[in-house]
Length: 316
Image (tube, rainbow, N blue to C red; front, side, top):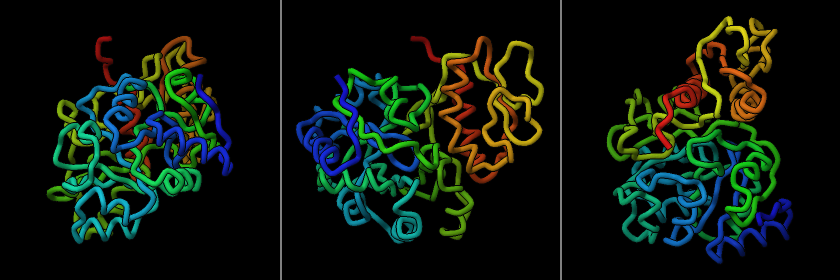
């Protein structure tokens, strides 16, 4: 049975106790709900992969309370200190050299010499980190490859019975996963997300290279097929075919079945994306057709998730 916990002092204490016992607890961040397990425990991290059905070669993000805790697991250079100071706490993950003394389970890093680390801003997540007192490995709290959860009920729909508890912190404000910035070599955008790449480039004073390899991921969210509903997804559709479910964007899609943002606001569209994909999947009798989304700012993250949702599915 999976318990649904309120984000009260008692609920947070219960969640922290479960985590200290090696159990898995889902919790809200500003991006999506994460599935947390003690990042130092091989058993807890193995349970994350088992609960999600996640490939073992796909590394996990380590979530911590603050920059000092991040420095305990990763080696920070001047660039990393600069972007962390500018954007943490917030929807940014840094891939940095793994600190030899970090004591993380090698399952977290997929035996790579680097680690992905983030400091979320959500107050419930922050309360949980401080009550638990250690690093949490936490991918999105959904079956691997499926649509990411932005509400507690999404987590329960996918993982009830597989994990110990979910802390219900309401709907996630950002709605797409964190931006992943690789800093083990030249700065590279490994995954677009809640922090626009343009803001990172301004902070670093240089352009970001494109990074990531679906065959050999060095950060989460790089698999070619990911965030996928059951129905087929078709992108860039201004006029959907008869029988299709139309997921629109902007004032030109006023007759859409659902509209990510009737005003064309990319922030609103990002916040609605995964919830609306789930809703579309539950209502679609045919394909899900999605309006064109501007490929700038948060639109880059939205389009990244939609391309992966529309990609050919791997065999079961």
